[in-house]
Image 1 (tube, protein in one colour):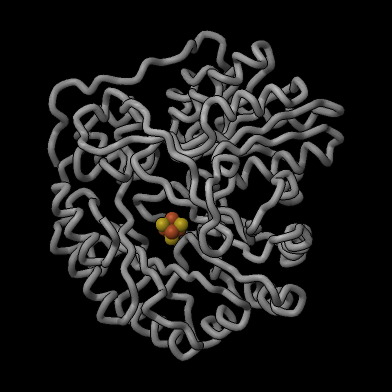
Image 2: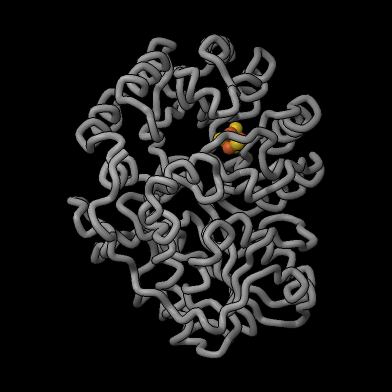
Length: 445
Ligand code: SF4
């Protein structure tokens, strides 16, 4: 791995003086009769695709706060920046080219804000009642510019309203998030009585979002699932069905995405009973699994349940056929199990050419050849490889390994951006080599 050339210039920080960190669950659970505004910021990135992305945690929290008797509002800068519908309820999102932040100045690619434009956001805020509390969520750690952009504009319109920042970036990079301009940063999992996501806050949602479990029982060295959800917990089938019924009653909702990290674990007691009722009660809905399914769990019955229930977009997690990287990925599947799973999916009626399989590219120590072999293996099984470019996620063993040689990563989350980390930042693969892998996988440039 290369060392970064010289000192990487960083992004200017907000004021940290007044920001508190910790667990604000009690503050939120004590709110009654308050007006609360939830914000999902735009994404600042080189690329962005709507893989049924909704701020699920924020939607759960807003619903809980409504149950407590508060008046809740939502501005989702991604959803409200939609420009045209795509397949299966997804949308294309407005993009505005923005100046690259200093750490990306040398990268010959365009950089955008994906989501509402500034004028639309400010206009939207002006039409809302003045909130008593603002909750801003956050996604990828390297999307923090969207958080700062939102908080800056929120301060213009609602200068003295207490603002709590939560979400993935806040949890994984608290020392950085205190410089975002928020009053409070939620660094722990929120403890609220959760019912379901408040999807009815969207004016015309085309898909619902479902979650049958939180976290994952495995511990892959590159994944933060365990850090974000320290214990793997399964919800009851009844709870998930209640969420489904509420969302599928909304006009126009004919699709649903499962957000689980481990949907098929313990499938007999959770997934199968759920499928049976979904088929009977909601035969018009198509389901999608943007997170990869555990290949090891796919046997004949599982493939048939998926097909009969209407699972349309299936993604599989193989990640690598290299035994060394498989070990670092919890040894969750073998090449033989992958072949077997593909055969079961074909038997069940899936067109295997449309089943996408995640292959990780750009891991530290990974060669071009190793990724090529994994892609070719997937293709020999008849399936389609989909490259997942590695991004070092704070608080994971692989991040620590990378950051030991590249300490700048601890200070500047932008450097972890998956579109550029392996190529332009760490030099694990040349940009041309990464493009050759995408070409081999059949992705468009
Ligand atoms: S199996 Fe998937 S979700 Fe679970 S720890 Fe590994 S990468 Fe994360």
